[in-house]
Amino acid sequence: MLLLSAQQIEEWDAFNMQHEPIQSIDLMERAAERCVDWISANNFSDKKIKIFCGKGNNGGDGLAIARLLLRKNYDVQVYILEFGAKGTDDFQINLHLLHQVTTEIHFIQSSEFIPAIDANEIVIDALYGSGLNRPLQLLSKEIVEHINISKAEIISIDVPSGMSIDKSSKGNSIIRAKHTLTFQLLKLCFLVAENADYFGEVYVLNIGLLPDFIHKTLTLFEIVSQKAIASYIKSRKDFSHKGNYGHALLIAGSKGKTGAALLAAKACLCTGAGLVTVNIQKEDQSTVNTFLPEAMTAERNIKNTFDQFSTIGIGPGLGTNNEAQKLLLQVLQEYKKPMVIDADALNIISENKKLLELIPAGSILTPHPKEFERLVGECENDFDRLNKAIELTTQYPFIVILKGHYTLIAENGKGYFNNTGNAGLAKGGSGDMLTGMISSLLAQNYQPLHAALIGVYLHGLAADLALENQSIESLLATDVIAAIGKAFNYLRD
Image 1 (cartoon, one colour):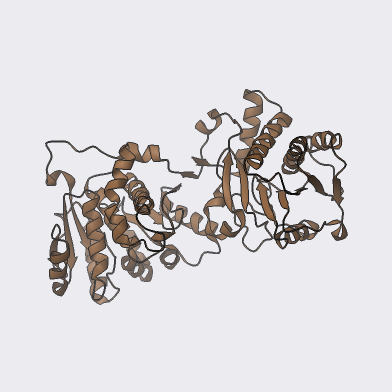
Image 2: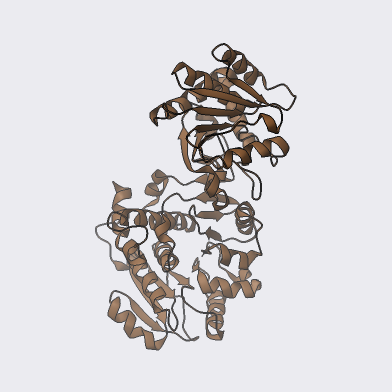
């Protein structure tokens, strides 16, 4: 699913009007009908509804929704933000039509015209839509803040008023919606943590826009589909053996952090690597051999050779002491195939950014937001962080996986969002497991981008499937690893 900019959304509307063909007013009516269908299906008929409209096309949507709800005998009052200018053509047409069915149309010209809102009422926010390109001010801001403190149930149309769809609105006045009814596709603004308190539950309403436009459109970001991930997964041949599925080396764990190595190694094996060796301190080798007999071990020192391995995953629980720094430097100087770099390995690189030049092409970096900022510097907001991740992949030939609720996989100036996973992954060990999974896929000779996309998707999907037997609170990394097989089968089915 592509994530369109505000300009591209306007272009899609124009494309539809030209090629369906359809008038803009009829397209607006179609959008309003889908919103009313949703409202009707959610049993709001016993409540008073106040609809707040601007004078743009989002306000036109609100007026059309009001008219259609009145026809269904809803108790509706309409409040229009009056700033002295004429509304858009479609707004004016819908205002004329609304005047024919109700007198409950009010204009908010100043603060004293803002109505009281009862906590038991429904507010429909149709003030500003996806075309907004500046912070709300003066009366607009005052209305939004008044709605927010009302404690009424708020439904936003398209996006919550005050929220930009493709840049940061951090610190601005924004409607705090419980429900957002957006059209045709998700928007980028719904995928970033800084907006999470404002859009509530998002519902994508199909208004019949022609898909041909999407097929011809290039975007910076998209959401990875289950169908695409399933198509990337390779089938195993009957006459194969462990040597066909690679040998992954995991350089992980240190004093007190052996668990990171165990989780990474078990996830690596469960994702299909033929062989896994754990490079770990001598005193911890017996622990690995006892709890994970399927894995081999190599004693940690700086005399290891690495060419025999299909890939390397380095960083989980590694530490950042001198020994770890020397080992990472040796790996980067000697190993030239794609590898996975995580956690403490990233922290070491952030202290010596010249090491970025040594990272082999096709390698995959897996930072969480703080680790990422140590690499690139402080980010002003989530959109700044996304753009810096994209920019980093135009400067260097590696992939960046920026972990989060919607994890971003960035490669060569393009961003892919993952939509599997849940808050149960917000727990120690989740990142270690992901490193092992992606290392396994690289070892099996998946293309680096496919390894990153599949690994992140499977990681989240396994966490979702594990909730059949766990809660979000109780979910452990070991539960997720146990569900990796179920996730593979889910994709195949």
